[in-house]
Structure formats: structure tokens, C-alpha cells
Length: 304
Image 1 (tube, rainbow, N blue to C red):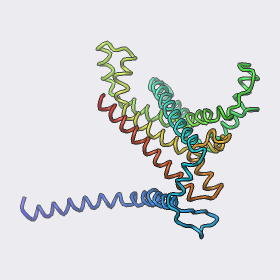
Image 2 (image 1 turned 90 degrees about the vertical axis):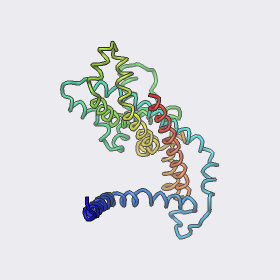
Image 3 (image 1 turned 180 degrees about the vertical axis):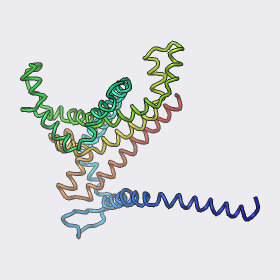
Image 4 (image 1 turned 90 degrees about the horizontal axis):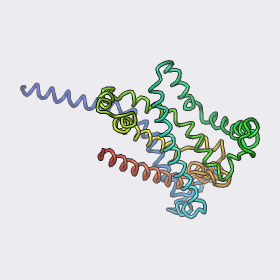
């Protein structure tokens, strides 16, 4: 290759690299405008006394908003609700979704119809899901209580699903019902990507169905399971619509999570500066939990 050919090749390589960056530039600009700029502005607002009703009187107050966040008498309860809600929904959703995905993988007839029915809760708007389950779990005239008490006579008294003791559990159940279809489809796709020869080889080696699941299925699904678990946890920690419709965070703070306290502070009390401080704290909590989860997952995968 002579000097001219080398220069021509280097120009082509440089142009290819520049063209690649040009292709991703619109997406990066959109990501910057919709994600990073609001994050920076939110952190800036958390250091002010910004009130939407007195926006002209905004002042820098340093870390005072964070002091109010941590001195809130309900803060530890809200954090406990957040963590309990996220972990319970994530674990139960992944387990149930894996079981359903294994069953779907055995379906031979009307496979597309069955998958469409399974996926239906995911495509319903959160407002519709919340309204349906609020009616079904109503303590007096709800469908669930009517069936259990009036028709089947399984229990003597109607269950108050939205009482202080059961509110968070009821919300968790509804959110699991809402989330499991997406995780199920992801795991079902992962199951179909597993080479059938691995199962045939394990059967020849004398492995039963349980050993095949443990030594063939789970190792091949570990990356899909990691992604699904992380996504489910982040979605759950950002959940707002269903909680707001079912309980509005009540009674008291029994089902209040960080998104609910952020909403109340910003759009009911109009204290956007304090709400931004809550948002920063929530962002840190999600980041810490996500990093911890990824580290544990990485260590587990390396051992495997």
C-alpha cells in the first residue's frame, strides 16, 4: 500500500467514525434535553426555597432542604415502605414470571393467543389498572369480598384491603399483576434461545427435569434474569400512578413511597425546592440499590 492509498484509507476511516457520531447525535441530544438537563436543574432547585406560588422570591438556601428531608418524622417509614415495596414486588414478579414462562414454553397450540392474554395487563394504562383493582378490592362492595364472603362463605367478615395493615401489601399485589407480563415475555424469549441440544445432552447424562432446570435453564437465563430484576426494581421504586389511585399513599403514610411524598410536596404544597431534595435522595437510593445488585449479580455470575 503506497502513501496515497494510506492517506485515502485514513480519510475513509475518519469519515466513518465521524459519520457514526453524527448518527447518534440526535439521540444524544434528546437524551441530554430530556434526562441530564432536568437532573441538573432538579439538583439546583434542591438547594433553593423554590415555591411555584412565589417563584420570583427564590433564594439559595444550601442544604437546608436536605435537613428537612432527614428530620421528617415519617422519613424512615417512607424509606422502609420504598425498600419493602421494591424488593417484594421484584422478587415475587420474577419468580411468578419464570414459572409462567416455563409453562408458556410448553404450549403447542394457540401460542400467540395465550401470549397475548398473558401480556394484556401490561398494555393497560395504569389509570385503568388502578381503577379496576380499586373497585375489586373495595372493603364493602368489592368483587373480591363479595365472592369470598357472600357467595363462597370462606370468611366471616369482609377484608379491608386498604387498611393500614394491608394497604402496602394490596398495592404490591396489584403492581405485581401489572408488571409480571413484561418480565414473562422477556424470560420466555430467553427460554426459546436456549439450545435444545443442551437438554438432550443432560438427559443422556441422566439429569431429571429438576436438574435440567437447575444446571441448564437457570445458567442460560442468568443475564436475562439480571436485566429483568434490575428493571423491575427501578420501575417499582418509581411507581406512582397505581399507588396514587389505590390509596394515595394512605392511610396516613402506610403506603407512602418516595414518589408519593415528592408529588405531595411539589403539587399539593407547591414546595418544589423541597420536592427536588426528596428526588435527589430517591435518585441516590435507587443508584445505591442498583449498584449493589449489579455487584452481587456479577460476583454470582463469576462464581458460576
